[in-house]
Amino acid sequence: MRCCKLTTVVLLVASVLTVGCEQPADQPDVQSVPVVEPQSERAPEGDVRLRTSYVPAYSYLPDGDRRAMLSVLLSVRNVDSAATVKLTHVDYFDTEGNRVRRYLTESVDLGPLETVEFTVETEDETGGSGANFLVYWEGPSDAHPLLTEAVMVGHMISGYVSFASRGIELDRRPSAEVLGVEAGSE
Image (tube, rainbow, N blue to C red; front, side):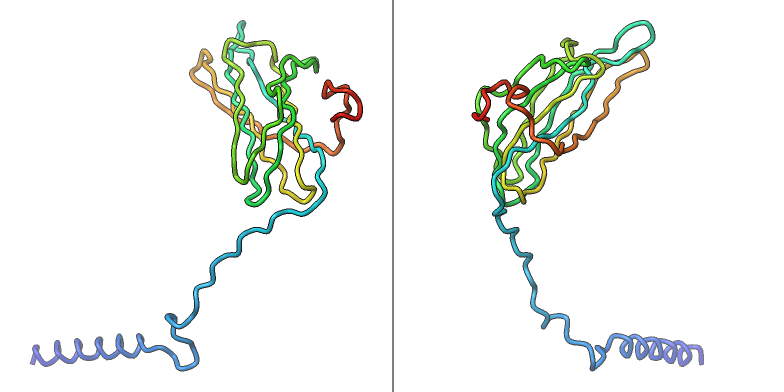
């Protein structure tokens, strides 16, 4: 008797599972649906224009009665998967707004999804606690803005510290004086 009950239960479960696995008539077979590949992003076609990104940075932080020195890595990323952009200047400014360093002596092309990095060494405190970068670049007006970040790393009394700050794109075009070039040549 026990064997008959067990057989009945097994048959009942098997029939429920079989019925539950049937494809409803109104739904298409999954295998017959074509796979659609994503289309590649079209290349931007806008006019070329000069753009500027501002990135805050910190070459040191107060740490009790001393300064905790930080190294700075500026990461400049072209997030556009179709457009090549041109970095024209990368300038490092101190807390008072004085340019203390220009990183590029000539323009650099940054291809789609390419990244370039610039560093400020740990022992370099010229920027101060209010340092910043200005990244000047040109590209199609409809290209995605660059992703610019500064990553700071250092050692404090309490241990290691690391943090990042993200840049913003500025609305105004920089003057020739700021770029350090003759008017009309930028």
